[in-house]
Length: 68
Image 1 (cartoon, rainbow, N blue to C red):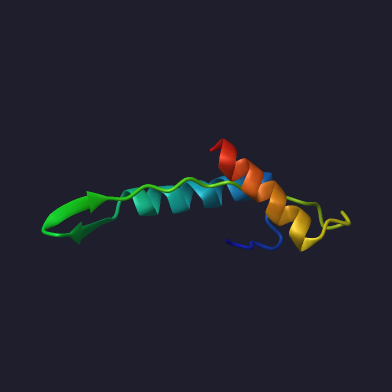
Image 2: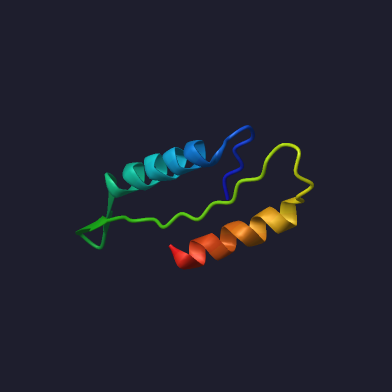
């Protein structure tokens, strides 16, 4: 889980794409084979004035990840 304070929807989408791209560009070796990596990202954004707690944001992000 990544917590990015002061990040709006556009910033969250940008961060998610940067994470996805970084992971997609990496690879690892396992039993003498090269393995390409992927990642799915789900995120939730709340306005600073919103009275949304951590658990609620976590559940929203988990639901978004399930849809990714």
